[in-house]
Length: 399
Image (cartoon, rainbow, N blue to C red; front, side, top):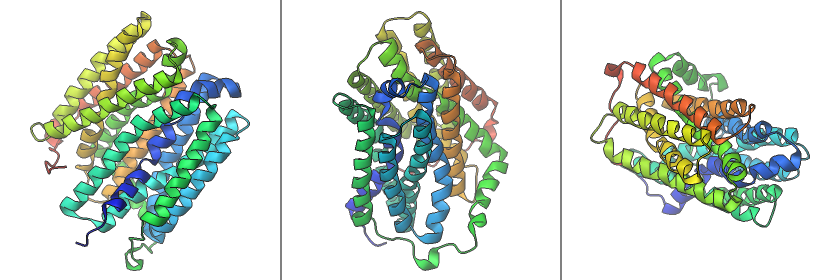
């Protein structure tokens, strides 16, 4: 196997961070955005949901395109589109225009995540591939920590439009990374020629796989808790509890570190316990602490009484996401890439629509707690209803 420089892996890691950067960097400015454009809290949240919709659908778009036309050119075109749409977001005159542009921005941003993984697949195999994917995951895990801190810093001297200008600059930097750091890795002989329809047969197969879909829906339900936090917490913590944009960014960063720590613990425990058992324990803990979040919200308790159970609830995503993903993909024998796209699309679509719908009745700590409790409870019920003999233990190869 030909060796490839660490700089290439780091470049791919930066491109993988497209999603978290697109979603998280403007979170501290979300309440200000809604006030400036005269939009309701629900409609303001949907600017984030719009990007999530684009990121979800884009996963099903750019994979087949890169299989047909190669990795490099689609990646460059998509990143260019991301930079352009970021500028358009900054000058959006209405909330409706911003929502429309954010969908396109998400479609462009999805290319970085999908094509980066495809490039690793082209170049590496075995232990080298595991090491490469682990690096991508580490960079992607750091992005949610840094993005809101950057957004909070920008919010101290600029409004929400300045945040999107910063996103455009980030897009240009990533464009340079793609142009100078990512070579073409898919040969002409390895490209698909049978038509786009052939690329979606794996998606249909995954949708017909009942055991896979049960686990996928479980992951989607658990993800609603995380996405509810992402979309509601700016209003709860800044408007209800009076945190500054920078203070919110610090809280967000701490919770993101919790996810990373839980994921590292999950990696160690997975060698000793079946993934299904880890998920049951994690969802049980998430359900219990979501009750605490709900009670703290209903009693309008002091901020620490809300933040501690919220930290634990969000941290469980570091267990739920990788474990449920491993279990789900372990239930498919072919077209794992298409099945992975179904997992990501389903979770993002649920996260894109459920929190804004709930927020139509107003946003508060109690609403956040109730939504998270419902999400964890549904996911736990689905997990308990899953036949245990059909759950295989995930591979224990070191990562």
